Length: 147
Image 1: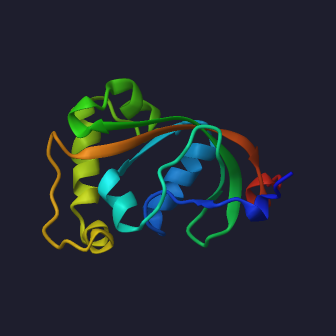
Image 2: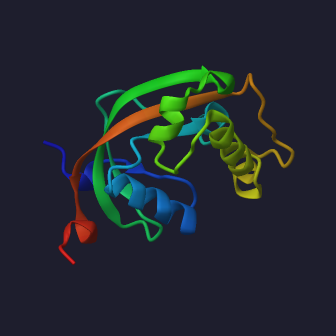
C-alpha cells in the first residue's frame, strides 16, 4: 500500500491567496473539478492525470491537506468546457463566460506565461485544456485536526 508521502503533489494555482481559496473550496466540498492548459503539461513535461490516480493536495506552504483521487480526465478545446464543469470548480461561476474570463486572465498572466516560456501566450476557442474531476479520499495533516 502506498503511503501519502509517496503520492505526487496536487497543485492548484500558484502559492498564495488563489491557491489558499482553491484548497479551502476543495476541503469544503465546493470544488470537485479543475482545468489546466495542455501546453502547461507539455512545458513542464508532466504526464496527464489518469483516472484512479491519487495525489496529495498541498496548500501554499506545500503542506499536505488532503488525498484526492482523479475520477475523470478529458482533453477538450476551451470552447467545449460546459457549465457543469465551470460550476463544479467551486469558485462561484454563474456562466461559462464568467469561468472563461477568469481562466483567461490566469493563463495569460505573467506567472503562467513564465511557466509556458512564452511572454505573449494567449488562449482562444481552440486552445486544448485538460479538465479533471476528483474526489477527496481523506483530509490529512493540519486540515484534519479539529479547530
